[in-house]
Amino acid sequence: MIEQIAPARGIHGVVSVPGDKSISHRYAMLTSIAQGDSQIYNYSTGADCRSTLSCMAALGISHSFSEEDGRPVLTVHGRGIAGLQAPKQTLDAGNSGSTIRMLSGILAAQPFTVAITGDESLVKRPMRRIMKPLGEMGARIAATDGHFPPITIHGSPLRGIDYELPVASAQVKSCLLLAGLYASGETVVREPVATRDHSEIALRELGADVSVTARVIRVRGGAQLTGKTLVVPGDLSSAAFFIVAALIRGESDLIVTNVGLNPTRTALLDVLRGMGAQIKLLHLEQVNGELIGNLQIKTSRMRGGTIDGATTAAVIDEIPILAILGAVSEDGLTVRDAAELRVKETDRIEAIAANLRRMGVAVTASEDGLQIPGKQQFRAAKIDSYGDHRIAMAFSIAALASNGSCEIEDAEAASVSFPEFYTTLRNICR
Ligand code: S3P
Image (tube, rainbow, N blue to C red; front, side, top):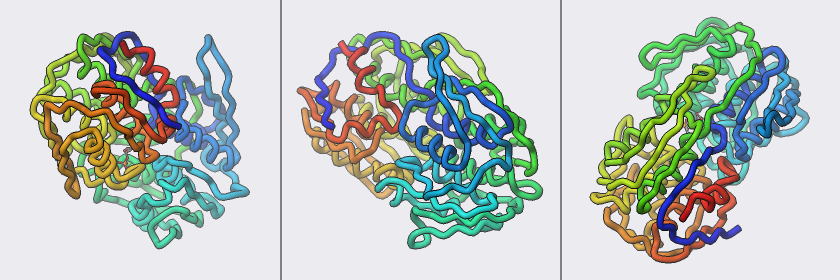
């Protein structure tokens, strides 16, 4: 599908975004292995989170959607920590790295063998990062060329380990914490830099024995989790596209409601404010241990700057949209320490650089970063999404600031995290 996006003068209105993708995955997995029913409000509408639900269904956990005051509610019929059943077929994680990596932690401990694979992007993504520590816990996992999906997991009794993550990754951390629920003794995960802590919060919320001190997370095996009512905050990484659109288009005034503001996710707002963004917090509350709030964003003079070190890890999903902002900022944007971008849904360094060049921006790409000049006027172009949701959405925002209409090829990739993206965008563009 090709989306035609015309330039826009400004961004106005009040929007909400789908439920947070990271939190939705965790709630679906954890309520499946909790005892009893859980009601989940605002579960992500994206294809990735549907993949997690269909994997759980193949493992014997049924779910249903109903409506309450016009809002969809997901009910997951959890069967307890030992309630999963051997699936009849290979599990399909679709495009979702979170599904395959986190679910593997649970599968490693089951009394059966299971294979899990995904789409043409997922089968190119590295799995050794989970296979190595899970192997140390006693798991037996085979992968294509020792590294890639499909992976086959022969469930085994696990023992707790003390593991220092070599790469900052919330997916790997979460995988090990989930495995730790089934392991004997204590599982300890040490992070080089803090990553999103939704798993720690959700585990505690459902009754697991978890403790966190200074980037050291401990979980004790053997606890029973209990189902409950959960609310998923809106996804700040999805809101990021509209936030940047409002910042860079003239005379914009946008309100984003009910968006997740967990401090391990808000480095984006700190980076933007550091570059000159006017972003106001209008309301803040805590639900299920997660912060949720409303934000008001107004057009701002953006300076640009450098993103590196721990900040890069904290805004890794937002680099595509920050790159767009960088090109129209005063000083441009330098991104360093971002080698992880090369193993996302596509090689995002390559995808960002190639599409920026199509729009007339002389960007320099390196092995682990990008150098993007500022004060650029985007040229109308055909954009290749590379089948990556965040590339499709980031360059749709670039199109709003270009000198003519742009075509986004493979635009439907956006539905991996945000099926309503183009409709919402059209509603707020003036
Ligand atoms: C995620 C962690 C990050 C992020 C991904 C979602 C999660 O991946 O890029 O979109 O939900 O834990 P890594 O763990 O590979 O850094």
